[in-house]
Amino acid sequence: MRKTFFLCMVVLLIFSQHSIAQTNFWNSKSAYLGQALPGDTPKIFAPGLLASKVEFTANRTAISADGREIYYCTNTTWKNADSLKVKYFRYDGKKWVGPTLLNSNMGQTAFSPDGNTLYFRRGNAGNMVFRSVRTGTGWSSPAEYLVRNYLIYDYMPTKSGNKYAASNGNWGSPNDANAWRFSVMPASDADTSIKDLGTPLNSPGFNGDFFVALDESYMIISTNETKQFECELYISFRKKDKTWTVPKSLGPLINDGLAHRYGQYVSPDGKYLFYTRGESEKDCAVYWVRFDNLLKKLKAASYF
Image (cartoon, rainbow, N blue to C red):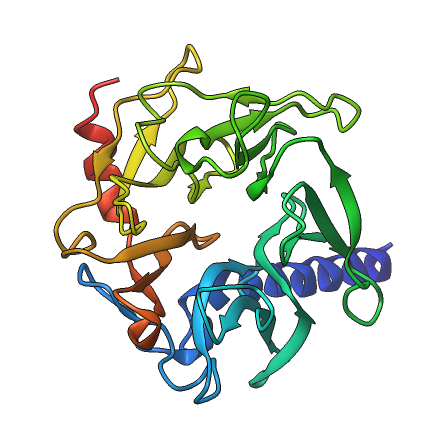
């Protein structure tokens, strides 16, 4: 009896230590590729580490729930996705390994809520969503997952099963940027409908890039688009009646002048906002900034 009790205690201790180690990784010096953490002022994430000299980092970042995998995109031009690549770093328990190429001609990476699937958009295949699933040795090759008769941009699934995207839906021409709307798709893959999220979330002009929290409590959108698609980052909160608050600016430290801002993503620990910023291809890069405190302030100021 005592031997069985002792063995149980050992197992519980090992499990507890493993759980603590997983939790503490976010606060370790190794987290986020070992980079110095940003404060309220955005800075480039891992400069010189992610891309070759002929590439720039752009598009959406995706980080595993335990913080030990970081996925991001590189490209050589804004004009097309021919050179777009998804790369990643993986922490092996002692060091970060990478950058490693995951796939080519893919972008807009997003994790499933359980972390076992990665979703992508491929090149100009605008009405499709591709996915890779975890295997014993990594990830499967991207395969078609959703095919629709409307365009799907910045696809993101949530815990409820709802799938968010920007789209022209059944209400606008694919070539009309003003027809794009932040939208939601039903949880059932068999249901091919899509719903425009309406105002005040959508505004006149292109409504394309966004991040939605897994619990759907807020969305960070690229808005105030110019004709050249420069934009600012705003946040909207979902109310109890499932409508959305009037979007508010993330502030002058993030919206610091005319620039393209897209690929927004909040880390799983909720502490940091990642986004692509560039006034041109030459200075385009992924930035990151402390976000949890800003989120609390913006939510308190929204009065809902």
